[in-house]
Image (cartoon, rainbow, N blue to C red):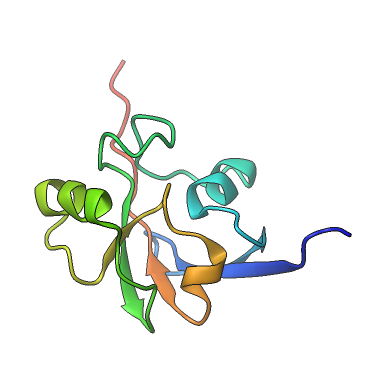
Length: 108
């Protein structure tokens, strides 16, 4: 039986809000990559760089795991109210609004 399709409600750096369809247990980062939505990330979902953090601006996305909290403490403005996109699943974020960060501009 296929997984139920649910979604993330995100606020893009432009301020526009979008609902992004996601399968059960799918991470926010996987959904952003699949839908070609730019988001700051370096390690590709390995939860070792801490750069993919998002801010929970409405609702609750659950507490980060201890290793995730360590990365957030180093890279995000604060641990509370933030999660890593590579670790946050649609199951945890139901009803929450997540603010995305724009990736840095590429200088050539």
